[in-house]
Amino acid sequence: MLRRTAIRTLLGTLAVVPAVLAPIAVAAPANAAPRPHWVAAWEASSTQASTDAADCPAYTGLTDQTVRNVLTAATGGDRVRIRLTNVFGTTPLHVGRASVALRGTGADTLPGTLRGVTFHGRRSVTIPAGARMLSDPVRLSVPALHQLAVSVYLPDATGPATQHPRGLQDSYLAAGDRTSAGATGYDTSIDCSLFLDAVDVTAAHQVAGTVVTLGDSITDGTASTRNTDSRWPNGLARRLDARHGRTLSVANAGISGNEILEDRIPVRYGPSALHRLDRDVFEVAGVRDVIVLEGINDIGAASATAEQLIAGDEQLIARAHAHGVRIIGATLTPFGGSNGRYGGDYGTAFGERQRQVLNDWIRTSGAFDAVIDFDRATADPSDPSRLLPAYDSGDHLHPGDAGYQAMANAIDLSLLR
Image 1 (tube, rainbow, N blue to C red):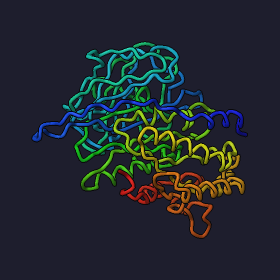
Image 2 (image 1 turned 45 degrees about the vertical axis):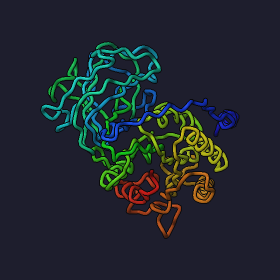
Image 3 (image 1 turned 120 degrees about the horizontal axis):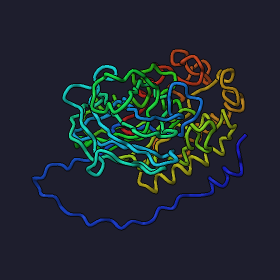
Image 4 (image 1 turned 90 degrees about the vertical axis):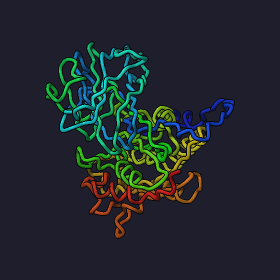
């Protein structure tokens, strides 16, 4: 059951944003080229390491090893910077070397694309516990939707690592410093990213900024096919990249198991959406819009009511508007039939009532700047409490590849500014 006193305290606290004086505008020369601007090409929301992830060594950490994180850039650019993270570390993190390259096959990099990364001009850096570190920019031509390999060498024992679990993308480990090497030595594949939470690019002028997708496992892509970029935010990125004229990049801030109201246990489910909003949305390069698809775990795992979730959403909305970010609400997808696997109030009569009330409020209240109706896009018309069988991964909670594509196709791109 919910820790109701903690929730009431949390929902009664509204972030106060101090006033900032507007800078004096200076006109650019009439013949000046558009200034390059940074947008997020990729994001992985961080969580604390836990003992229950057999496919990721985050809890034990690394010693004298290199992790090669593989990721897909949602948009292209001609300069790249990476952000390393020690947010959940308890001691300073010593990074010996780091590099970025276009990915080839497996753990290999494309010839001629590997670039060493520096931090304030130095190749090594120490990141304090609880902090993140943005690299210096490097020149690298990154095509949109191409995969990158970001390699980080950890010479000393790291302790439990800040991670993004269940990445549905093979990354790799090697002994020693292999940041400037090809695939040789990368003999272990892992299903998480380690010590890396963002990659930014200087985008073409038509890429106006970034839309962040804030969510749980359905945004993180659980039950989609590994190594295929079949999550609905990937489908949205492909649609936006194909759009003529002004468009956006996409940063995926989904965490499997995440909730709006509570910091859920196990800790790999991550801080609540209310707690991670600043880090995972407002600090994203170029953020303009955020799409929120959260609440199904609050209902299923913690028996939250629609009233409690509406209060949580209202806090998200108020804080987004205080930061000048448009916030788009997405209705919760059906979960009928999922109780047998997930228990709690997943798919129960109580859970379905809360989902329906919340979805009705999202559609009709006008509280969000816009609405995306993922519920109607994925529901079985003969039983709207359930996913359409063609879209169901089989657990009756998570869509499969076809369901995630249907979600991406349901988004009216004109809603994104």
